[in-house]
Image (cartoon, rainbow, N blue to C red; front, top):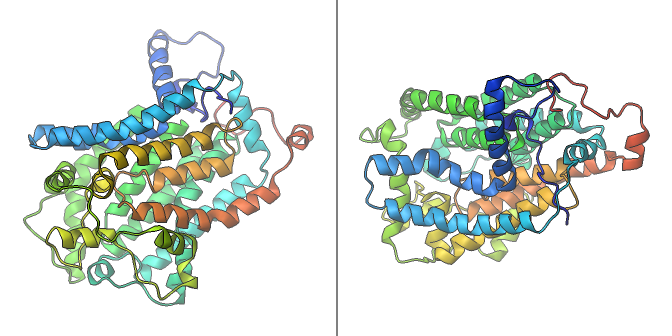
Length: 440
C-alpha cells in the first residue's frame, strides 16, 4: 500500500495556487491555514464527516439549551472518533509520501474517456427515477404513516436506480477533478440534483432526505476540494435562517394530505437533535429488537425488490418507536450514533466507525489515488453507513443495495478503461486539465 500524501485533490479548498507569481500579503497569511485545513480533510475524511454535524449543530444546541445529557453525547462522539482516528492515523503513518499524487490522480481519471458522459447519464437517470418514484407514492409521508410501499411495476423499477444520486455526484466530481468538467458546470449540475430533491420534498412532504443530501454534498464536496469552507459556512447560515419557513411549509403540505401535525413541535424543537439523541441514554444497552440479521443483509441488500416483490419492508425506526411507547405507523431513531449505541453498545460504536474508516482508507489509498469507481464507492460509504441522520443498521443494507445498483455503471466504466500506456500515447489525453475552472 502506498500513501499518496492525499488521496483527493484539494482544489481551491486548500489554497493551491495556479500562478508562480507571489501572492498578496493576505494570501500569504491565510495560505498555510488553508493548507493545514486541507491536510486534515484529506488525512482524516471519515473523522471529519462524523464530527462535523455534532461540532456545528448538535453539541452547540445541547450546550445552549443546557441538555443534561450533554456529557453522554460527548462520550458517544468520542467513542466514534476513537475508532476512526485510530484507523486513519495508522493508515497515515503506514505509507510513504508521494509528491506527485496530483498527477497520479489526473492520470487515473484520464484512463476513462466515457467518464463525463456516464456521469451525465447517471445523474439524469437518477433525477428521472426519483421524481417518477415520488409521483407514484414512493417515500411519501402518507405511505410512511400507513406503512405501505408504492405499488406497481414502475415504482419497483424506479428502485433499481436507488443510490444513483450519490453515484452521479461522485462521477461529476471525478469528471471535474480529472479536468473534464469546469467548476461552473459542476455547480450547475449540482444545482439540478439539489433542485430535483427539493421538488421531491414537496411531493413527499418530507424534508429529511433533502437535508441529508445537502449535508452529503457539502461534506463530500469539501473533502474533494470543490467547495471553499467559507462558502459552505455562508450557505449553512442561510439555510439555518430559512428553516422556520421551510418547516411551516412542510407542515402545511402534510395537513393538505390529511396527515396530522403536532402543532406543539416548533421549528426550533425540530432542530434539537441533541434531545433526539439523548433519549437513548436512559436505556440499558445493548437492546435486541429483532433487528436485521445476516440473512436479511443478504436478501435485502443484494436482491433487488423487483426480483423479490413480496418481502416486507424493513424499518428499524418503527420498531424503536414501538419500543419507546409509540405506534407502528411512525418511526423514531436516535441518529446514527445513538442507534449503534442502542443495538451494539460502546464497543459497537468504536468497531463500526473503525471498520468504515478502514474501508474508506483502502478505497482512497490502495495503489495510489482513486479512480472514479473507488471514488464512487467512497462517496457511497459517506452517503449510507456514515451519514449522521441515517438509521442503523438499515443504512448498511442501503449501502449494499446501492453498490448492487451501481454495478452496471462500474462495469461500463471498466469496459471503457484504457491502459495507462495507451492513455499516455493518445493525443487527446491532456497532461494538464484544459477545461477552464478545473483544478490544476
